[in-house]
Image (cartoon, rainbow, N blue to C red; front, side):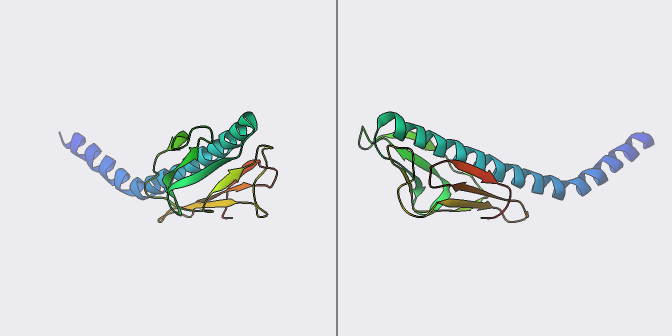
Length: 143
């Protein structure tokens, strides 16, 4: 019985030491997941603009808050969306008001959009940038 108590005490001590590192790991993985999902959605919006031969716009569901989710508006069916993405809790994401792809697959506007993702309690950050040709890419640092 004493041996069992000693084992339980050791496991409890190790779990207490590992919890903060595990919490940071989870936040880091959420940031990576959001960056990957945002990159995929940008690629989809570009593909749809080329396929439909019309401009396609991607925007946050809540103005200025990309962490609250985003949507790709369907230009052929007003009020409908090609894709709607859900919220990412615990992440702060900044980016442009919207991203519009022309029918050529290029970005509408003179400045290349960039999205910065971070979370409190971790140093991990991701940047999803779009070059003017329309190709999105992920960088493992701040924008």
